[in-house]
Length: 531
Ligand code: XMP
Image (cartoon, rainbow, N blue to C red; front, side):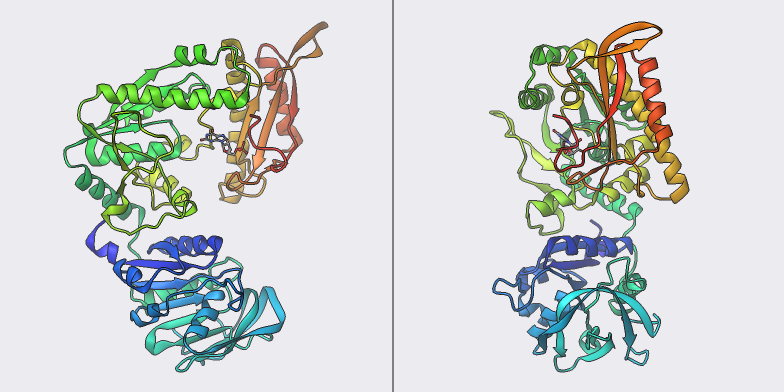
């Protein structure tokens, strides 16, 4: 990372996971780099990270609960500007000698906030004297610490915000980070720019420049290998590494024959035409077909496919001379979820391996994970800025085991061909449907947009009639879900005309299919995939 930009870092002390992520996202949206650290990170560790400011997040606990998350009081002695939200305000008040009380009535949802700062608060800036803010609390500050003043109130919350401008300490009981606080972004901007004096220079271009420089510095003249799946993350890593080190990168694309129609050709074309990298297309289709022959059990299929991928990959790696690094598409939520602590700077770009699969005997790589500070939609933005085509950048999730887990029962070449054709129709129709919604709403994942959609080929047959002839053929199951993260999902409420078109086309255009059914189960209790 470049000198100036690393100094501009806002650390979010996280008192409850989902709150911290949202705040970091808002700060980044304002073009200031932000990272999340656990709330109890010691003050000296925080100082070592050299942040420009701190934000104390909200959290679900009461400050008086037995196991209430806490912070190191030493952080208030670091001389940094600090902003606290909700629990963050309460813990700031309590730590600095104020009081927090259990209010009789909680406040949940929109609240009418009134400023009482006479226009002086730099945090509230030029936002209206009376405005709606989003609250979600029962406890609240009843007495502000010495040196603080109250800057706004609501009917049930005497301290809706407080500050000690002299020490650059600010806090709100409400949540400026949620969209339901209409002036929340303005307050956050006021904190970052008017109070902390930061510059909004964390842009995708600066990110690319910094990341490319960091990869170059770390790799030197060594060689790097990357397992390319065609998914967004590995494709963006490939594009970044290609920009940084060109021919020192070898992309290994293991084609297991279980990808969707035209996908292998598309991946190869993008990476051989747009980027100056060595691209190895491993044709492993026959080996996979043999290994999967007659295998019906879903878990067995998954395990065969997964271990063979690494076998193929390491076979190639072994034949390449002087490969020191393995590049991977690990992204920030993976790191946060695994609870890994980041120490910032170069050490975070290249780490010793904590990988999912053990390396085989005698094989050792250092890992390069250039996306380990980015959220998924930032990765997509990066992809676009790096010149990857739209269909790759906005590609829906696709499981590693590919179509094998969408064919119920044993995989055969015939079933694969049938599923690929049906799936291509589903994708074509629902890509167009999503595109229409995008043009209408301006949002990629608007309400009712399909987040993931595909065809499944079950191992059953049913009777039909086509052109006066009896048929006895397979159905296709259409699966289309709305979701944000695949942890939960609901079936997409597709318009009847879209469903009709998909059904008519599949039955007419795909041999061996005489019926289309729609899966209307949410997750839970079902899962997105069928196997
Ligand atoms: P389930 O079926 O568990 O899927 O509800 C949740 C999300 O994960 C994807 N998925 C996978 N992705 N390797 C992957 O990279 C896998 O083995 C795998 N299995 C499921 C699935 O497509 C959905 O988006």
